[in-house]
Image (cartoon, rainbow over all chains, first blue to last red; front, side, top):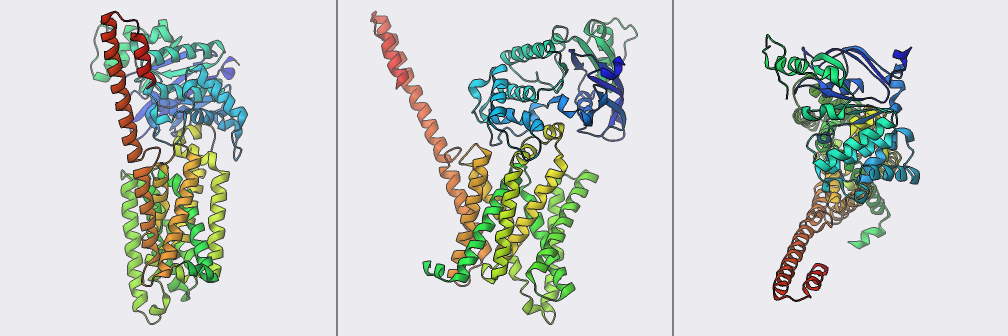
Length: 253
Length: 323
């Protein structure tokens, strides 16, 4: 029954855009309150995996269970932070308005966000240190600030499980620190967070567990066990099309 | 020209055009922000064969029959566009380009045939190319007004949802919204306003009334709600100007005049718009430069004063910053 209650259980996930699968037979199970880094080279299918879990792209095969039930029944428990480039930042809206969108799922059709939703959104902006920019047009924010607005929007969703697509990409040190603090707080509140991550130097510092991906699952487990030079070499070296006969080579950094 | 307001018939036509412009401007805001500006053009051009087929099948000149034909053809065109972009490597914009021209070509072929047939000259189909507001009857105006109001109402009810699918559809889907259904709703609304506008503005230009007011409105605000209302107002003004001028002066087509009016509003907005207009950008830059120069100057003074051992250095610097 432990398996049934897991915040996220993915089994046999296979996704293909064209003939060749981008993600193949990936299975793993996230524990409650775990910070998981999804690591792998470019084109390893990290973002694809997240999008398939969320049903944004169709999977050829595979099952996703959120706290034991299919994703469609549990949408409200799942928060999503897309890549920053996925939207047009010239859109006529301000930071607070974007964060308020995080409440739309709870509001449902036709109902408009009111004072309660806006107050909650403002609190979320405060948590990421963006309260001073609440009324700023989103195009006038720096890249890091935009990323924090996206995180605040995810916070406003008040989800139990978060999927974040490269939140650390192209942000400055201040934003990186703000994100790390936020991840720690989410963890303390017993929420589970999956983060697509690129910077290998910070993996051991940030994450409890690691999902090492290169089309298929290379490894999944506690960072100390899964984030080893040997396994990294398999994830990254294989991509380059050569394999060292001695698997102790110091690589992947 | 003001005396035409005394003519009850013309007054109704004017009223109809204003409502039409309003509906177009409001719906157009979302088309523009979803980067689907060309879609309105596709739907409008595709309406022509629909109108012709409706006439050939029934042989009667009934506006509501024409509009049914137009709507059916427009929906077929949008389905074609979706099919092409989904099942081939052709991108959406190219697909729209293909569909637009094919449907329009079929429309022109059919229209030429109709006009060379015995009852062709009475068909009045050529009016649908560039539009003629004066050809509208009272019933048309009622239908137009009702349509525009209904469309505006739907946009008001689904404002939050349309904002979501315009800004971040993937996030919306993650929230559990049926984004595909919402997108089709929006597409249906575009079809309705475009088809409704064909009689007054014509298939060739009606899409301009959809997009231009929205683009103009964007120069004045960074808020979606304000932009939507403003685009509606701009659309209404353009429709009014087009109808008014073309019914007052003989031999002027309504559609092109409306579009020129909308374009004039766009030009003014691009120049004078408070948010991102050319003039406000220029003023802002000049002000920033002046402030910078002032600050540098005062810092320079402060440096000299400090070198002389004067205690007033800070006060000078502060004065400079306030200025």
